[in-house]
Image 1: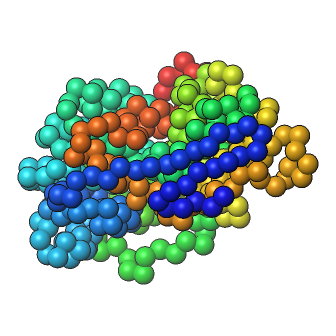
Image 2 (image 1 turned 135 degrees about the vertical axis):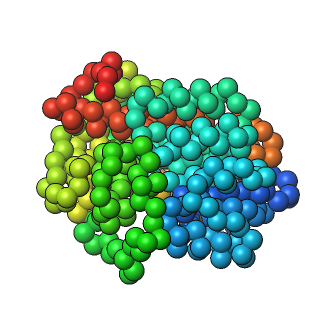
Length: 389
């Protein structure tokens, strides 16, 4: 059955239960928001905010002038512009959206919470394993809302998939396969080179080691250890969050990672990865590379009674022992990026003070799994769940 935006249910062969998805809408009052980190991802977040609002951009902070100016223009000239994000936090705001490089996430989020602002924090919410405790404490000792940017948790067909898995429709799930292939070789850089006169490179570095400006690092910071964590804290973080959510387990006992820089030798992080994580009662594998985009990304939950295959375009369920089981007994398609629903959930929670769909603990656990895989890579291939950085 194909997804219908407003109302839907599934009647599934083999004893699977009917499902229905609903989303509550918030009150129709204007939210005043601040923007911290105005790069490409923030543009999409603001598109979503515009659609699910109403909201008004009050202030924007970014260390690169053209990005600040673009958000000011987007606001109709109303937003104030700042290099120092603390000046945004001084404004009369309901919430801030943070989409800076990873190494800034916890510092900015903790400061925003201390300033009494609700926070939408892009993933991965932490840059190191150790930061997880600090971020969790900051959220739970405050009265603020923090939504982690794990948008699958608000995406209707992902929510239905989790209900199916937890309801036992697949039998016992003992293996989850995750994968994501992208081609950075085919990604063009912005037409205009970076105007270094308009960039505060020292502030961009923040707490990272001092180093000379590099356009590669500025645009592809995810692939350098000082600022990101490569595929395992970018792409894999999304998928392992779905696994943690569906399987009700978020602490791997052992992690292995086989990886290398076969194509992009200028990066710190490997471009070709195979990883395996062992959880109590099931295993998760991940594979991906950054110079081949065929098949894109997805997950497969393999159980004793059936297999569920899911990606951002939809999902299918395949039954064991059913003739022609290469065809799904259930098919659900997605017609809208789940970030819209995720932003709606955040705005609703700002107004109602309810717990968001992606709480801090979920974001910390998803980031930690990828960070553990990176740690295994750095330590020669394998660590146990008790390993320390």
